[in-house]
Amino acid sequence: MLSFVILCCVSICSALQSNQLQTKLDVGPRFQYVANSNGDFQIADVWTMLNDIFSGSKFNPAVSNVYHLFTRENPTLSQPIVTNPALLAQTNYKNTRRTIVLIHGWMNSATSDFNNVLVPVLLAAEDLNVIVVDWSAGADSWNYREVNQNCILSGAAVARFINWLNGASGSTIAQYHIIGHGVGGHQAGIVGRNLGRQVPYITALDPALIGWVNNIFRFWPSDGLYTEVIHTNYGIYGHLGDLGLVDFYPNGGISMPGCNSNECDHARGFHYLAESITSGGFTGRECMNYYAAVLKLCYGPKTLRMGGLTPKTGETGVYLLETNASPPFSQG
Image (cartoon, rainbow, N blue to C red):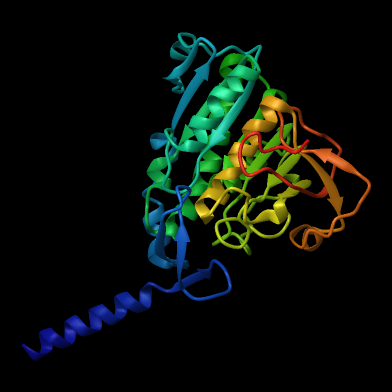
């Protein structure tokens, strides 16, 4: 009996030792409160252990990712796109249109508010193919470390899907605009990177903070030909520092007028983008850097429009703007 107990103790100790620390996602405590894209807080382990790598390997986005097509012919009921040319020909996808790809955040899916707000606005503005990426099989987990790993895997899979779609339809990378929210903001950059950094326009809406500060896979300015980031809840849900070729900090990047919660601030990014598409509003003034933006000390003479459907290719910099507390949010 004693030998059995000793054997069990040795086995447990070996298992604990084998589950070694691989990476600390960020400087700070191992267990932190993290919010999903709906604003729900949950305690999360933000260190990556060896077992997490094996756990993450269970997620196979090539199989579990679902691609929902919306067009003006089917604005409310999506058509799934699968990697079969004959089935693609039966959908409303047209290679003569531009294609917008939407990527949701943590604990979200194709039916998230992010998609529900943007899909109708996009289709009203232009005759487009809108593809909603549902990677909820990888995003729907309380293990935040695993979600970040899955985000990277999903981004590579989305890029492979786009390459297949272009080959099957005759479309080109030049027709794409990729938009992501929260963790999906970083995934949008990962997609662009895997497509040779040739996507004309990539937008990250309040890209996630925890696990991405020192993460080499985070959103980078060079992920596309023009990359734009809109910060609305920095330091809590969203990343603080500038990440794109152009970064906008509405109201200094935190505490949006009309909001009384971090989740509301976090969601404002896609509401601002939607309004920018319909009205063309939101003019930012240039800042020396993001420190000046968060302190609202921006006096540069240069201005730039935030959001919209047209990439501002060649532009760079950090910009501050003020918004109203309710729609219309733009002050011009």
